[in-house]
Image (cartoon, rainbow, N blue to C red; front, top):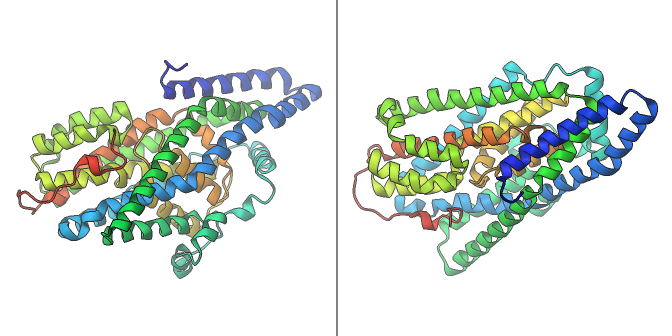
Length: 440
């Protein structure tokens, strides 16, 4: 199995879980004894295996999100020396990520791919999720908030308590503040603290990769449990979900970016897309913004002929902090699974999901499947069964390749926009080696 790429292993695990679940349901679900035996297998074998996989993900979310977000924001470390460039990049990142999430959430609210499930099946799925998570799962969900309360709740009085209570938005805000602090403080002690955060990130990422390596088994177990008990009705929903993600990505790629490049960057969109083809192809094939970074830097300097000091600064940060496709994907996935499980999210909760996705786009590691822990965290935060993450893993590789292509295109578009009006002179440079997440 080590010779088979992980995404193929996950696909095989998904197919095995679905196939075994269909066979088990056809053979045993129609008899009382068989149905009881099937429930016993789910409750005592496949269910616990899947729950252990999810628990391992949740265990590592807190340190991973904290370290990744701190490092992502602290990449703006030269904000004062770059001045105008740093500010333009920061504003661009937040604004365009917000546009991406808004497109995704609007699409999923209009098309509603997760709805239409048989009511009895939906209730049974919710009951099964409550049995696995505990009856107080809904009570642990983020309470609805709106207006000023939403803003007030973002700022934690006690970050440790926010983390323990599962208030990840407040925890991410705390990480954001720490990252900004590292931008402003240039002491030896602050640099040493940043090294500690880098170490935490490296350890967390390696542990996450070990957990993701178990994904074929965890996905097979979770999908067997779902399919054996509830049939394959959800497969149609999965196809509709993938269509919504790809459609929203296409809108952002071929409408939003050309407008930004044309009107804010002063460059022909046709020239832009023609010149960045090598980076787009590399991103699509590797599904990693970090692995594509060397190609992206070369494209910006050789093909687009952008000022070197600007392109290196923007693209190095962008590989970690400017992930519009990831933010869009996370928003669509959360709302799709909310519809699938019949969880009604208030307007305040949807706004919170938007904020989480924007911050998640900054704090998500630029590696394949790097957004999965973030999605699982948001699901648990708003009261959606985290088991739902298994439902989308079977198609995640294709979606990951597409959203990574969008991420890299967005980085290059940002470089074009930020470069406009900047002199092509030598200035302090941020090389890819300064990025803790850059490929080694």
